[in-house]
Length: 113
Image 1 (cartoon, rainbow, N blue to C red):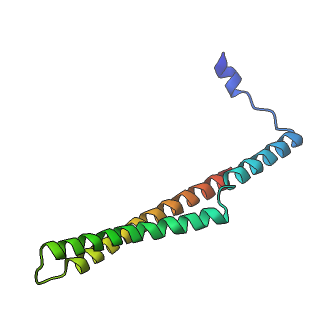
Image 2 (image 1 turned 45 degrees about the vertical axis):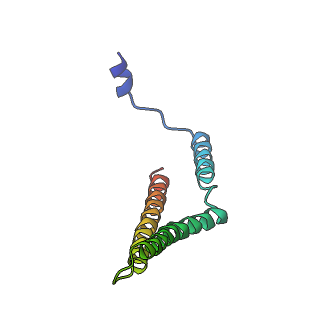
Image 3 (image 1 turned 180 degrees about the vertical axis):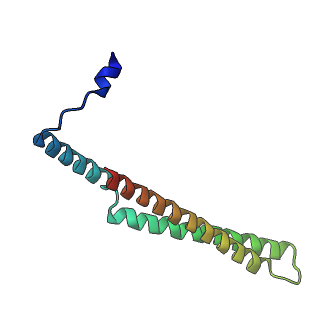
């Protein structure tokens, strides 16, 4: 019985209903993008900066500690500073790629609707 109801052609939407639906959709999109302000951008830049700075500084501090504790022919400070920098750059790349994916998905959703 429900199969018969599903097979019946649906009535075309009235113009007023389409217009109200389109306005509601625009309002929902605007609410979703409301958090993408200047402060959001500055916060993301800060997050990316700290994601590079913290591993770099931790590597340098660990290297200084190792150089004082176990002096040798090579510099632990320089080696761990570079390693911290590489880890920080990979971390920043991860965050930028994640935000890029999120933005592309939102654009795709907006285009599909």
